[in-house]
Length: 166
Image 1 (cartoon, rainbow, N blue to C red):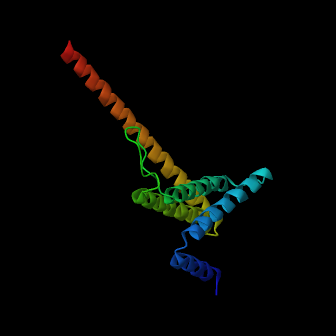
Image 2: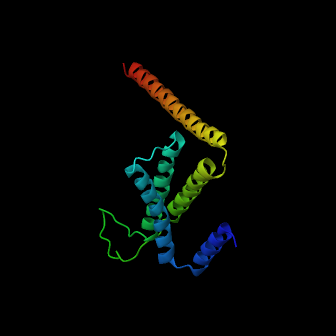
Image 3: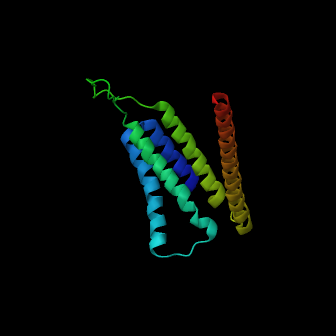
């Protein structure tokens, strides 16, 4: 049996056992190991190519998402400054946030796979990485230009209100 089938079988067994503590441990352990490996590379001053340096961002993002999932899966009791919580032992799961984080994890994992694993061709790696950076830069410039438009619109509205008040 090849590696992919072994991993798929292990994940399926883990899923079917529904052992939450084991799932939490595997979630934490898998991304914690990736973070550790990145730290080892940094400590040894290993010279990485430009696109490999950014892999740490995706690894840290995935690890932080795992930590958030583990934290949310513990459940939260309702806290309020307006009333006393007489049932602090009752915990609620924020299912919608868990689903959102899992979706974001899939995106991070797929992006990591797309950028670093799916191709052995160096030029293709470079093209994928440069496209990813360019897409990010375009998105950021759009967000900031939209913000500038909103600011200008807000200033115009304030000027109009000032004229009306005068």
